[in-house]
Image 1 (cartoon, rainbow, N blue to C red):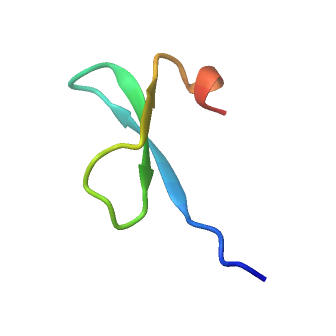
Image 2 (tube, rainbow, N blue to C red):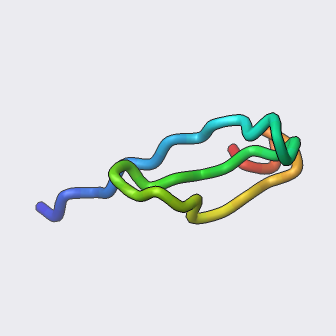
Length: 39
């Protein structure tokens, strides 16, 4: 079975958005206005 990548959802207070970042990466993969849009 293939190993799935892990992602972390964090709130960026500086830019007032939610960032989805792949574990081990420095840049966010995607950004969302609200947490409900991200989940």
